Length: 428
Image (cartoon, rainbow, N blue to C red; front, side):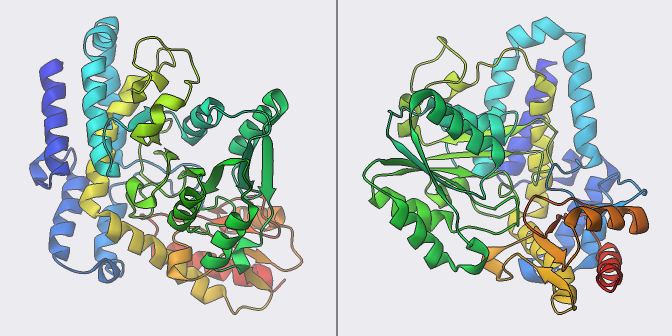
């Protein structure tokens, strides 16, 4: 197995360097995606976003249920069929030599996987760790920060529940102070948002938690500006990238953050139960591991990886997800995701009784947006969308809102179905 795994990773590594040879693809559908990408040539991301022939090729890489239209990719997204095949192939290969693999080969293969993911994320492999999801990644940081009683953590009411609870637990156990912002961010411009965070900082503020994309509404927050402002005040920043990684084209270092966590099973289209943790190299030594570890130096990112035995075949399949994303291109992908959001928003924005809650500017939203119908409970709207029109989505907890999360396999016909359904429901 060692030789085949080395060959596998070499192929993935070559693609990272730009050698996208069609022969490496595992299925006919992925070869078609590669060929379609070649056909696009030098077309801009914005022009490529309109090329429905190309995106039908992308859709063909997925095995999608005909039972309903899926607009809930925010929980997690389906993998392309080649990704599922890779998970199964790895699971079978490891199962043939179970303990031998885990004891003799896992460390080397995981190191190579970290190198691939670091290249994809734009950072050093000494700053990145594979995890199971965003919650695990950010709990490692939140629970590991050396905070004293009275030290302040600053975050907004719109942050994800698991992160808020982690900070609340530290407050209950250790006496840190949570300073919580309740900002009308959807009606604020980026400068106003940055100014509000700055105003809330005090001499006791040690860390800010902020989402790159807010899970409730899909709003993109100005995290780089927040990070730069915070650093001027001597404050560190944790970025929740759950919905931003491989959704927006930004590389992690572009954000100037100190800590970053994301789930790869969302917009990266990777196996369910895979995540990423980034800690700036100079910060690693000052963060305690969530699980005790004596096998690595205190300044090694791998001291945070001691979670016990885990399904390695999931993480090894990330190479396939990296290849898939790189063949499409992150800038092209981001442009398409924004286009399909605008496609339905532009058709509903002026419809009586319909309210779009997410800012429309290109730099303030991408694939995710929230919409509601005046006077109707969001749960009733989502139930009607599924029961009457076989469109699946959820109310995220934002007042009056239904969250719409299409993906790169979504086609205009499905968006047209949704627009027609919302118009009918709004008229009742």
